Structures are given as structure tokens and as C-alpha cells.
Length: 276
Ligand code: PAF
Image (cartoon, rainbow, N blue to C red):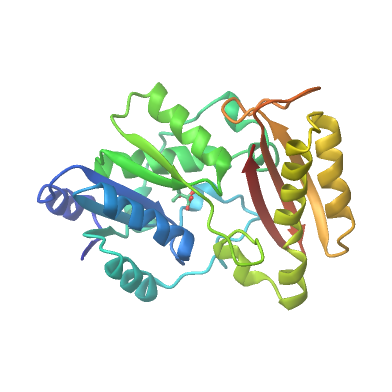
């Protein structure tokens, strides 16, 4: 596996790869969820490129940019073992050189859910992903369903700006007790780690209720709220019962649903989701 930092190094190494090229963008501190994306890309593509960049523009000033976990040496070994051909690790200066002032924004689908409480987040994500796509020029790019809204936003951007890239969204990888893997899980102490199972427990209860015939959006939201509120260490930020593509909140009887939620456990903000 080659590792490059600058755009010119990337271009030179990218030119040597045979297609189709699969791309796995990450912010590092890799876990089994990221590696499942790299493995899928390895299975489906002739060449695989990954990137590691903790993108400052998708963090608000109050968020955890400075403390976001990083371990490049470990990440490089994991990616190499998974069969990645090329790793791009740009610096903030490479991605946002002095004078940078061009942004990519996606409108409606970024205003709800995560975007409602993190108003500048998706502008940072779409701008950096557009730059990563322009650098890597992949035929396919792999994202996790864990960030369900991010996947919807990226699909929208790719369609609206005619990027010739297929977006592949891979299933959430979970711990045996249901907790969705996240680099932020490392912030949890053992009591919080136990409490954090309330996200998947409450989503599964909504799924079970749905399959048992409860299709009323308000009742399904209320069920999840009740379960989360019963966990003393968890603080529910939102529970959404929305259309999986438009992210518009459902009212009344529902048919296809993306349940998504954000919960604070201590100072750690966790997200999870499930489609029925
Ligand atoms: O999902 C992530 O890790 C990030 O949002 C991404 C897509 C790598 C952009 O920084």
C-alpha cells in the first residue's frame, strides 16, 4: 500500500491504478465498520483507495475536533491488511490552503435531524467529500449506513452535481450487544457503555412494534422516547420517524420508515438508525 499526502502525489499514484477504483473516505481511528467498507470495495473493485482526514470544517467550534481520536500507524496497518492499494492522508493545509472560500451545500435534506442541531456540519462534509472525489476520481465510493443522513446527502450531491460515481451504502456493524460501532464509543466509561445499548434496544422495539402492526408515526416515536427516558444516563436529543429518501418527518400511518436518533450519554453524543 502506498501512502500519499499532497494532491500531486495522489494524482501520480492514482494514474497507475486500474479501474474500477473503489474509494473509502474516513476520518481514521478505524473500527470494524470502516474495515467492512474497505473489504466490500476490495471485493467489488480492481483497485481500492482510502483516505484519512479529520475534516475540521464538519466540526462546530464546540465539538470534539481537538480530542477526536487519531492513530495513523494502526490505521495504516489495518488498511494494508484489508488490501487497500493507496492511502491518501491530506493535511488541513492541503485540503484548505490559504484563501480557500468555495463550499458545496445541499439544501433541504441537510436542514433536519443532524443538520438541525449541527447547522454547519453537512456543508463541511459535502465540501470535503467533493474535494476527496475530485482528487481520487473513483468509480464507486463506500459509506456506512450508520451515518444515514450523510449517505442521503452524499447521494443527493452526486446526483445534483453529476459526479460519475456510484455510492454504495454498507450495513451498520454492531457490537454483540447491539451498540453501533463508532470511533466515539471510546469516550464512554463502563456504566455509560452499558447505558449506550439503549439506542439499539429502543430502535429494535420500534421495529418489533412496526412488524406487530403499529404503523402510527407518533406512537412509534413515543415508544422509543419512553425506552430512552427510562435509562438514567441517556438524554434523548431527537427520535425521527421519517421517509428514508426525503428525510421528511412522517405523520399518521407509515409504510417505509427510517428511524434515526441522537442520544447523549454523559458528554458523548451517539447516533443510530434502522430502516423498516
Ligand atoms: O463519515 C465520515 O467519516 C466523514 O464524514 C467523511 C465522509 C470521511 C467526510 O469527512
